[in-house]
Amino acid sequence: MTSSIRCFADDCLIYRKITKMKTELLLKDLDRLEKWAVVNAMRIIPSKSKAVRFTRVKSKDPLNNSLMDTLIAEASSCKYLEIILRSDLNWGDQVNYTVKKAWKALHFTMRILKKGNSNTKTLAYMSIVRPIVEYGAAC
Image 1 (cartoon, helix red, strand yellow):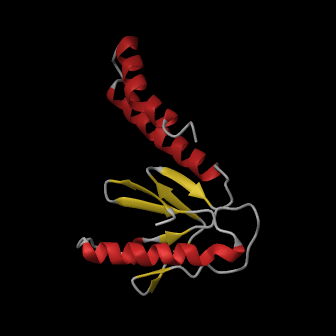
Image 2 (cartoon, helix red, strand yellow):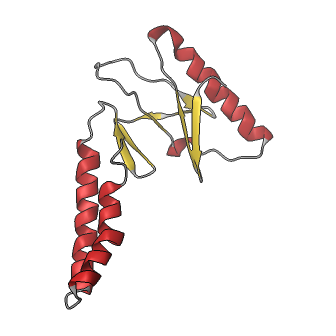
């Protein structure tokens, strides 16, 4: 297989740099993946798959990737390991998602620890809220 693969638990990400002349390489890799799944008795659900084109250039050409005779739906974004990846390489959705999730955790912590001392509140913030804000910051 010439495409790069990243696996975590039951998620799998297949990607490669594609130029106009090299689209068939990804299709060959998807065929190889399908054959590998059959040989290893692994079940792949193509309806849960998404095809995302990461570029700043607007392209009208549809992505015609298929797996197990099912066309993979094209999407403008996908979530991988709780990081939202947008096709236009913009991080706005990820920032909004993280802020919303951190606010929920902060308000939950504040409700639970209304009468707690400042050390307890600091510890709760550092262990519950801060990891949410920092997760994926390197991206």
